[in-house]
Each structure stands twice: as structure tokens, then as C-alpha cells.
Image (cartoon, rainbow, N blue to C red; front, side, top):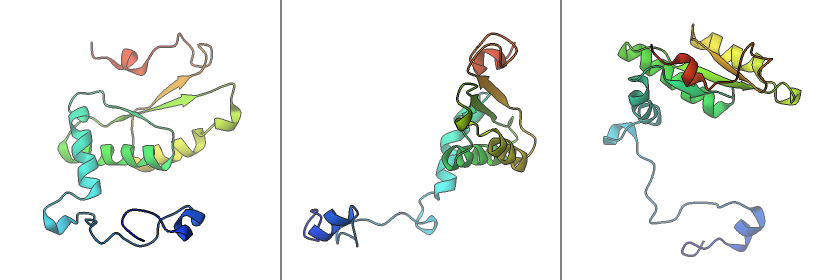
Length: 137
């Protein structure tokens, strides 16, 4: 690799190989930087401090990680647990992730949950944003 230009092999493979000589490495916990988990928890804490903390939750790896980090941080800080919010699309059965979502939530412990349905009849009432239903009185 010359400079910051990909080699012909890297272009053909669609990926970069090796490291640039001047690139900085990823910070490690022992050099004073936060670990990725600690950084994620620190980013989530302000939202947890203003309940309800809604977490958009598809059940995939990314949203599962955010929900797990938020649950862990809330328990450690003595805050209300986050509320996973899932979107249920009645007219798109191939997008149904309910089983996986419920497995993740069950593994994290008892959490309140909100399911936003794609039509008013599916959820038993008019469609409203979860924050409107959960707003403190």
C-alpha cells in the first residue's frame, strides 16, 4: 500500500489489507481511554437519568447491545430500566422478529416493553408514540 491509496489487489478484493504506518491504534482500557462498553454506557446515562428511557429495539445485534448496555448501566446506577420499543408490522410478516426480541428481553431481566403496531386495530387503540403513552403524569 502506498500512502492512502488502495493497491490493485485491495481494489479487486473490495477491502483493505494491513495498516498504514502512521495510523493510531484503537485505545485500550489501560491507557486511560474508556472501553467501548464504558463509552456506550456513558453515552446512554443522560437518557436513563430522564425516565422513561426508550430504546428503539429491533432485536438485532446493534439494538440488543444498546439495550443490554442501558440495562446494565441503569441497574448499576439505581435508575429505572430502559423501555425497549419495538415496531410490529402486521402487513409485513417476513419482518416479524417478535420471538427473537422477546428472547433478548427475557435474558436481560424483567423490563417494561412497548410494541408499536403498524395499524390502530393491532394494538388495541389509536397509534401514539410510546413517549406519549409513558409520559409521567
